[in-house]
Amino acid sequence: MTHLARFFAAALASLILAGPAGAHPHVWVTVTSQLVYAADGSATGVRHSWAFDDMYSAFATEGLPQKAKGVFTREDLAGLAQVNVESLQESDFFTFVKANGQDLAFGEASNYWLDYKNEILTLHFTLPFKTPVKAKDLIVEIYDPTYFVDFALTEKDPVVLVGAPAQCKLSVQKPGEIGVTQGRQMSEADFASGTWGANFASKIAVKCP
Image 1 (cartoon, rainbow, N blue to C red):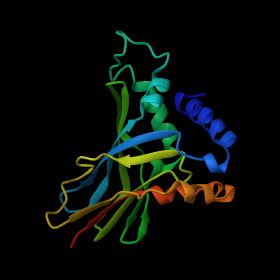
Image 2: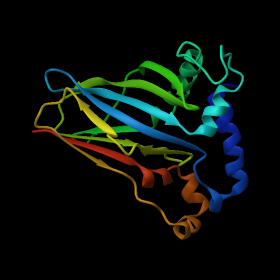
Image 3: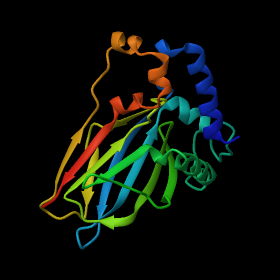
Image 4: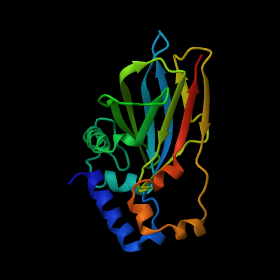
């Protein structure tokens, strides 16, 4: 079983034992993103950098060969990066895009690698759109529908437009907090529906003329 799958399986077991009242994320990811545009003004894809929480970082690197304690090079982490990308593909990379109100599909992830700094693993990868699109309204949402993984945009410069037409305007909406009481009132069916995590979506919107 892969590093990522083993971790998710162990965390899922604890989630099931906790029951719906105790349902909450088991992996935390801090996100920095870029929306990439071509010279003709078409949006071509999304570049993500995902910094995993320290617990996942420690688990994922456990047993990996290292030349010095606590030091992993990009080459050392190449296999793990591939495992992460292949596993995340099954969940559409928790990234959902609409262009002019229509769902937009991704091609294969590319330019991916992991780095390790201050005991934190960060996964970098590019999600190209299958078809570049000129969109007046581009919406990107990042979330896990099951709320098993919590995604939060970084505080400073969470999203950057790369090569976008000068008239395009970027806005970012971070998720509000759901109170403990409200969380306890959610039924098992609410969590099982796979839609609970949408309440915690980070939303990126770009409007172009």
